[in-house]
Every structure is written in structure tokens, then in C-alpha cells.
Image (tube, rainbow, N blue to C red; front, side):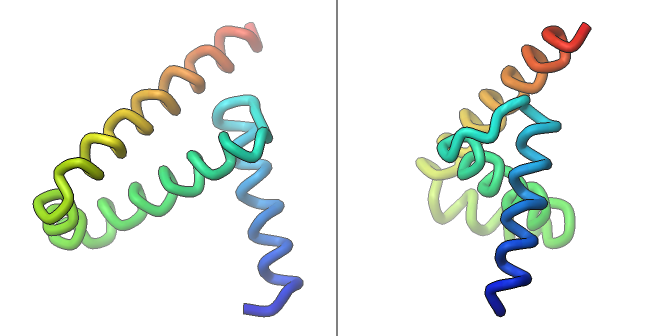
Length: 82
């Protein structure tokens, strides 16, 4: 991947994190990247996500916690905008 595309994708991810949870903190951006990747795979290739969940039950639980945290941050962000 060339540097320009990487930079543009990083900018897109940062903006998505800002709109989704109201934060561009590097730790939050990494959480959002994991959320984006897992969500995309789960929607486009459910058998792969199921296999991964079965292979790595600890990671599945960690991902569930991450998704719960992102949902909570999203709710807080939406409430703060009211």
C-alpha cells in the first residue's frame, strides 16, 4: 500500500472514530480499527468469524468487551451532543 493511501485511510479511520465515539485518542482509534475489521468480517464472511470465535474463545470475549465499550462510548457521545 502506498503512503498516500495509508495516510488517507488513517484519516478516514480517525474521522470515523470521532463521529462514532467522539474521540481521536490513539487508543480509541486502535479500538475502532479492531471493531471495523471484526464487524466487516462478521458481515461479509460469517463462517470465518465463527471459526475464529471457536478457535480463540478468549479473543471472542475480548472482542465482545471491546464492542460493548464502543457502544457505551457511542451512547455517551450521542448524549453529550444533545
